[in-house]
Length: 551
Image (tube, rainbow, N blue to C red):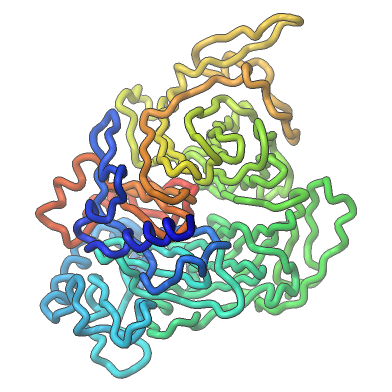
């Protein structure tokens, strides 16, 4: 089994990045069909082939999408986005002219891509290769502008340029004492530190992504260190997130059921001591005793691990899922429980918000995708189709419903899930067709009605209560519109962008599937993958498991 896995891993790295079909294992197709057309495998990203398979058996690869804007902060995000593709193409052309094109090894930073070579492959972003003749250990002229994939494998963080078809990453950062397990990016950070990294040891770092790209070494540079050596909590970090609009605040979830709130502008070594948790079964919030303390608060969420956290896009609500099988939704600023409930069976592993904040997806060990309504504060649909645990869920905020009612209200949602069955599933959730149980007469079966659940479901759950697992006959079932085996290894997560769907396997291989029409329109210009249409829907850093942002 191990030998087979190693062969599959090797096969995934041997082929040229431009000929993704050759990288496919037998039985895996390079496209899948949806009602709106064909999604095509455009290229892949992975870690350097020198990384041995057994070195990362205990960690699961997660991916963060990071959009670095111009070095001088632009006046509007739109200006930044609209100039992105054109200038990227100019830099690519300059790099190609200097011999730093795809696959060139003539110019580059020593060891910059983590491949262990004396001279590394250079990025298509251009200025990285163009100015690398400097003998200094940093390249301050490299503005780093672009879109990057940040992913963890074993004891390393890898950074790949999403706009390049190079398979190998352009940067690696290695950790000597512990493995990185979660990360998050804030594209609107007011100072340099925009990237968070949580480790298996409980340690947390904040760094500047641009500064890491400018440095040629394999260690973090300019990092702020929090919870050093587990001084506050020595259990594993499980999920990490910036607070939207939180001016540098971020939260870190741990495997012992606690979540901590930090402020990045405070000293990471500040003294923090919290009162003893009196009842492990009850939600509680404790604030630090001193104004200079960091973390500033501890939330005790549950017994057992918190597996995933996600903020609603407006930052009002925070969703958590845990080993105990419960989804919990909190009003973040008021620090109180709004609603939640239990899975049909087993732990919940992932969660994600819809763009409008009306729905939450959860997935876990019951092989189901649950759709939760914030209006009804309960499950309104179950997605049946996964053949194993569901490890990643996300709404596709770039997909537009073909039957929009013209009122601006969303009448259909598209979402996706991935899991240990190696499949990508896509689902359409049409609100008017959900069959919702009204009530169960004593001794009888439930009655059903079609239409909007908010007007027909008469028993909205009270605020602040956790619901038990629903009966299987009480919840409407929906089936996926697409079920496609995309990898040979179990999947860990997925992410939607304006022009693609990214799928990620646990072993650190990423596939980029271009949306219908995108691959064809870009065949004449393969320099950039993200087109100038980004100005209409700028990408937000999106932890896999949450949707990408659009305006």
